[in-house]
Length: 315
Image (cartoon, rainbow, N blue to C red; front, side, top):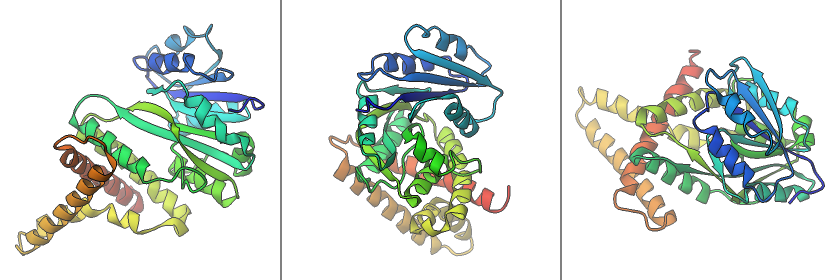
C-alpha cells in the first residue's frame, strides 16, 4: 500500500449513464480509500455527469467536461486535472474488486516502479463474451508477474506521475496508448509491473461484429505503434494475419483446389493451439470452450489485421 503518496483515480466516460454507477459503487467499497476521484466527461449526450455528481458526498470528487475528443485525449485531460503522485486509470464500465487499489498501489513502494497493471476479467452474457473472457484468461496466464511485464493495459493501470513526466506523458500520436507508454518507461529505465491480484471486471463485446470493430481500431493504432517502435516488431504481428490469409486462400482455391487442403490444415493447427492453451490454463473448461475461443480469436485477428493494413495503406 502507498500511504506516503497521494493517489488520483481517473475515470474517462462517454455516454456511460447506465454503467458508471456500478464502477463508482465498487470504488466506494475499496479497502484503500485515501484518493481523489477525477471523472472526465468526454462530451456525453446522456446523464453521465448527473449520475457521477450523486456520489459527491462519497469521494473527494473532481469533474471536468470536454467536447467529445476521444478516450486517448480524454486520458491526457484526466492526468492534467489530477493532483496525485500516483495516477490510477479505470474505465467507466468496469467493476473493481474491493482490494484492487490496495493491490495495484503496493509495488510503488519500490521507487524504481513507473507503472503497474492489473488483470481485466470479462463479464457479460453470450458465447462471444465467454470466448473473449477465456482468451483473456489465457493471455494473462502467459504473462509474467513482476519486472518482466512487457506492458500494462490502460483501463486497469497505475502510473507514477514523475515517471510519466519523465517519458513525456501519455502519447498524442495515433498509437496504442498502453503499449507506447509502457515501452517508453521501460526504455527510460523504469520498471513496469503486472499485479495479478489487482482485478477488475469489464463488460466485453457480446457479438462478433463488436469484437471486429474493437480490434479494427486497435490494429490501426498498432500499425503506428510498431512504426514508432520498430525494434519491437516480431513474428507475433505476422501470425495475426492468418484469418486474412485464409480468406485469400479460399478465393484462390477457385482456380487451384489443392489450396483448400492448405487452408484446412492451417485452420486445424490454429484450433489445436487454442484447444491446448484452454486445456492447459483454464480450470473446469466446459465442452465447446475451445471452439468458442477459436472462433472469437479468428475474428479478433481478422479485425486487427484489416485495421493494421488500412493504416499501412493510409486509409
